Length: 161
Image 1 (cartoon, helix red, strand yellow):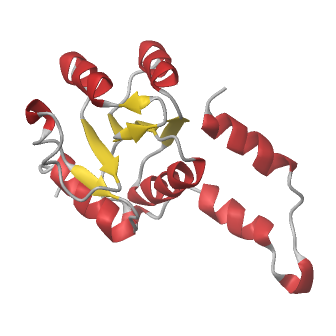
Image 2: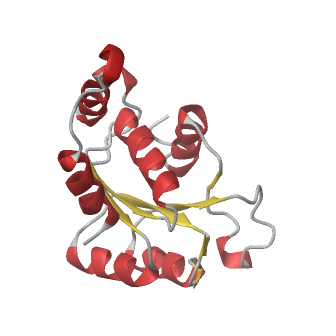
């Protein structure tokens, strides 16, 4: 089971509503609704997020939905990522550079070979220490917000801008 399925399972089990009229259920429902067409910056339908921190992955998911992405699969390991791309076709992928089990550079090269666009996500602010053949790949620096994600997506897909 991928993270996004676990999150959906958990979210569906949490009762809606909170004390003093602060209805978190309504807020959660609003986040799951289709984004306003005016905020869409791209037309990607399916995205793979490889991130070993569930909180960061969920933040990326929320921002990508605001950008117009319809389906986001979150995986936390290289093994899950390999299985995901074997089973589905993705418009692009976001790859955490440093996973607990190692680096995502080998998987990134595989994505290059099969033609899936991707970008890196890292707490490090430049690609100078990346392998030379991957230093040109767009980098989204953690922590990120909607503006940073938008700029990152424009670097990843310059024709959309």
